[in-house]
Image 1 (tube, one colour):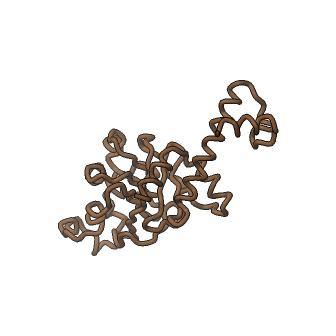
Image 2 (cartoon, rainbow, N blue to C red):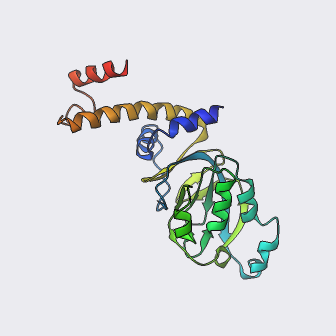
Image 3 (cartoon, rainbow, N blue to C red):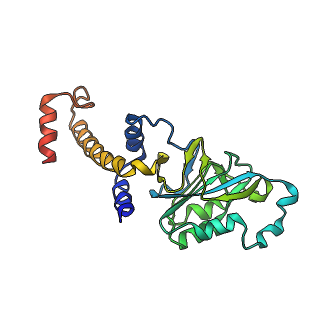
Length: 231
């Protein structure tokens, strides 16, 4: 129930607001670099990870997919409902991390989204799914060309960010950010307050108010107006 409440809170805030909140707490490297949304859908969920290492030809022939214990396939079937599958592809998009069949299976199992710091194949199909998906760029070659799936639900690096299983993942049009699990509820609460302030600022800017004294809020008149609005 606690996680559900956190998800509901984080669904109301942007990655930009979360990034500022984390920066205030001393976290400067929580935004996954060089990943982009295929369909601009909001994503919030707990991290479930898959790690690739560089492929070796004798271990990554096409027949390996017949193995029911192949880590990539197992990760798709084990990613929990409302989890976000985060794939460490070593920032290498020369071969796909996954394609539309596996990602559709994730969607049907109730996952909250998928992220790779590499690329996806079948991108047009993935973009048309009602499912958040983030990657570096399209990539048609099968993952076996360059990636060997090895570990499931272990700490990984994705786009230069450390991701631990159970961390909260938020994605939107501005990117994907990782919130350490231990401070997720605290961050969610603070971001809701920040969002309320940002909405106030935008309202006043649209009314012609100067940003001086408003952003940040140092003008006593505006501060009083904002505090009255919160009550």
